[in-house]
Image (tube, rainbow, N blue to C red):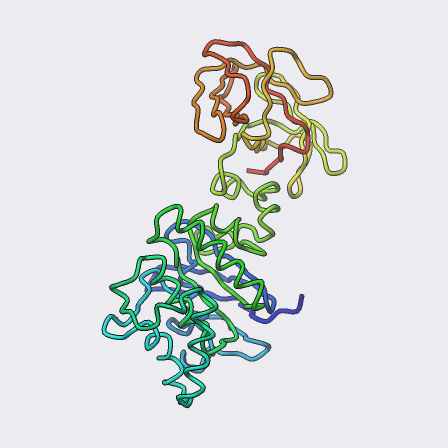
Length: 355
């Protein structure tokens, strides 16, 4: 996919504080890319620089091959959606959506047609005359989204737009935005600290930490193939077990744990025999049994607690050297505390990560 947006060696300082450091990132036309990371990791600053609200200290931002560092915000042809909605309370829904078109000098007939189309797009066609205060949070967010899309921008930027919504509404809006992206072929850059949100909506996820991108890839890649310890721990839940590499054969390595157990695992990045590493094992990949499995990695453990959490059982385990977590299907057998069990997982279910 050809690059439509390009961040080229972008650095941003606020006084002595470096919030984005020598960052490179390319985004394709029609792609949905989420910038995911904890507070202070630089993701929102990068979005604000793309929008034109902030200027990079060094580096260049290109849109469709043209540098836009010196282009003012209103000429960048980008729609922006904020967490706070930023709707005008004294205007109706229709007037809020029409505002960007009025600022661009569009005639009334053109405005009415585009506003109607935008309202239909977000399923609010019957609420055009209401004020924002008469709408629910989810409806207000849809208005903000319609306002960002009504002038048909080349790029849509979203900064934590669903953070103020309750869980059920947030999950529905995730699917609605994903559907709009696919139907309209939008190029979307989406900032979030919610791992589930990024995995649900994105074509690719860029995981930020301390002003740098630790890993970028598809949701499946960053979850199943974490490149660093930070990515493994930040996205979802994982078991991290220390060990030493004994042998490396192709895309697999044998790792010896402090208990003496040998684990065969898939490899992320370059590692060598004798190197101290971490094993990342997702809890849902761990099976429990009172009999030893053949042909798989097996650790002898003991159940310390088991918690029913609706769609799964969360089982806490411990062996001679480290705790483990297993997530079992809701119909799985419950093991009472103190039960000796074997925790089994295949080589493809774990990942070797260099520290």
